[in-house]
Image (tube, rainbow, N blue to C red; front, top):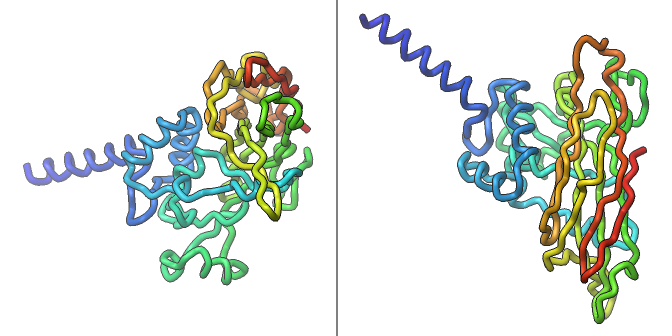
Length: 300
């Protein structure tokens, strides 16, 4: 009877681990393996900001999304397309130091590289880790490549992995007395590579309204919090291996990110045909001050 009870307890524990994709382990979330990490990350990509915040609260983690601030990178008149943008879903699963545990390995994301941390390195601050990162082992990447053949690691790649394409309206597009507005759309790819395997590739669309703020010394662009309407219902993605998510009418205040499409390799097509570029067509519409403004989207 004692052995039978112990077996049942072990089975219950195993079952609990299988149904719970992640658990809080110290200051970071811990995932059973790469597959469970990608599954929860993919589920989070479908949530709105409130759903993400509820999930973060339920997990009890101090996530990167609480401290991440890209506002300084968005202040200039010309926005660099070499910027590194993390999706809201990715920032949710990382802690404030960009760390996460997957399959027993503690990973630290810096820029586009996931580094493995040893027992002695786990508690080091990001500043300390940056000073020794040349000695760390790279376990995964958010690669930034643009080619349709295999790269130096002898794996197939998706064209334009982790690239950004930015669309900015002219100031004159919004005729608002006393205000200078612009609207920024960042169309970007987030491809997650772990242990030399492409586990996920998603297309995101970030909408951001800004106003011109001038001081004695300089003018910059700041986030505008006035509510507006955006409509992406006319946007479509046309590809056998990309599953599009329709962006419907939505009220936006400041910045909002939409999941636009997910890469879906499938049988019976051979692996060599899976790695196709994303395609998009249609206009993204913005409703501000009693008028629609349209931005035609295109990818590389």
